[in-house]
Length: 138
Length: 138
DNA sequence: GCAAGACATAGATGATGATCAATGGATGGA
DNA sequence: TCCATCCATTGATCATCATCTATGTCTTGC
Image (tube, rainbow over all chains, first blue to last red):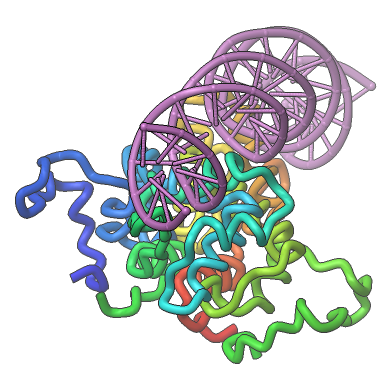
C-alpha cells in the first residue's frame, strides 16, 4: 500500500507481476517512495523522479496535461490540442510524446485519431511525494 | 482559504498586504490555483508554475530539498550539504540559489554559517496542485 | 588589522531541450 | 487504387542549464 511509505526502492527489487525485475519506471519509483520531506532521497531515487518533474516543468506541457485532464471523458484527441496552442503540430506532438514516455499520459489510437488520457494515479502519487500527504487511494 | 480552489488568478489581481499588486510569485500562483486536473490552466498560470517545477526537476536539487527537509529542526547549513555530494561547492551554492529564488527554500545567515529551510506550505501547495488533493491546512 | 574559513559570484564550456519546416507512415473514403 | 487527413519522425537552430575553476565578500578569532 502506497500510503504506508515503506521505502521499498531503497531495500530491494520490486517484482512486478510478469514484468521485468529491477527496472523501475519513473512513475513506479514515485509510487513507492516516501514523501520528499520525510527522509532523504537516495541518488537513485532522485535520478528516477527528476525526469518526471522535468516532463512537467514546461508551460506548454502543463497546459496540455491540464487540458487533457479537464476534457470530457478525461481524454482528448491531438487535433483538439493542436488548436489550443499557437504552435506547430510537430511541436505539440513532441510535447505529448515527452509526457507519454514518462508515464503521465496514456495513448490510444482509434481510427485516424489518437487520444491521450491522463494517468491520474501517477499524478496523485507525484503530488503526494511533493506535498507530503497520502495519495488518493489507488 | 486555499482548499476551496477559487481560481483567483484568473479573475483579478490579488492584493498582497503591503506588497506589489499584480505580480504573483510562483509559489503564490500555485497557492491560489485549482488542481491541474480540475480546470485547464491558463497560459499565464502555466508560465508562473513551470519555473517552480523546473527548479525541482533536477536530481541534485531534489536531494538537496529532501536533505534539508529531513534534517533536525528542518534546516541545514551549507557545509553539511556540500559534504553529501560529490560536487564542487559553487555548484551546490548554485542549486541552493535556484531553490531559494523560486521560494522553495528560506535562507538565513547566522554568524559564518548560512542555513536553508524548506518552505513546507509551498511544497504542500505544489503537491496539491499536481495531485489534485487539498493542501495541508496553511 | 590580518589571516582563515564559509559562501557567493563571474565567466566559460559542453550538454540538453524547445521549436520549426520538411517529410514519412497510416487510415479511411472516393 | 489514389488521395486527403491525422499524427509522428527527422534534422537543424537557438536558447537554457549543469558544472567547473577562479575570484570576491563576509565573518570570526588572534
